[in-house]
Length: 314
Image (cartoon, rainbow, N blue to C red; front, side, top):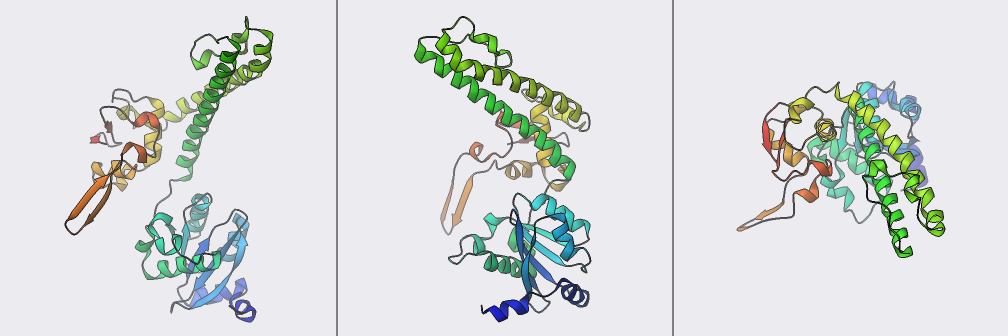
């Protein structure tokens, strides 16, 4: 595209708002960490404008705050949860596209932000279902789930540090005493050689501090559970405690979105791949490997309770 043609498509924000007041616009928005590119199509499908804006609330407001209601399509990503909520609060129709469902974009041999965002806008204009739209969880549920995930990261870090400490002691011909991770402290190094203590004491001290932080998260999660009374039903299942019940609840967020309880398993990724073509029909792959909930949710009886109190096979 020539430079003069690009300049014509970079309309001022006031011109875009006036155009939006007269006709229904469709916007493709490619979110970047610092800045985002947008492409605006008019009712006839012509490219009306394209440019960039900052990926901040102020940057979005500068274009969309005073614009008439339009359809905005964006791909799921790091910023898509808060961006979609922010744009929807302005009254716009927001479609969050699942990139795995849009091969026209993800598998294109010619990929750049300008082409991708235009394809996104054109698909949204023709049929939003072509984008495999998803619905992000609400701000409160996202914040609560972030607490659980942050705790999980600390647990992983603690496990790695303990394994490292034990692994460093063994080549020295020594061993750390066996105990639960919650009881690993700096004092565990007492009685070992000076060389071993110099290597592992800082690790054990870090483990002790991380355990304290995990305990603080546990208290937050116990308080959080009071806001989700449905977890009492989930905890009736043998092997399901507060952490798994809350993770399950916050992942689903709204049980009413499922017409049948059997739809919950596939939503969590507990389904096999299927290729059915002509007389050939195959399915393969482990359902467990596709799970997007937490590892502890995979219970050997493969049963759980949905938020409505019904037992479902997963």
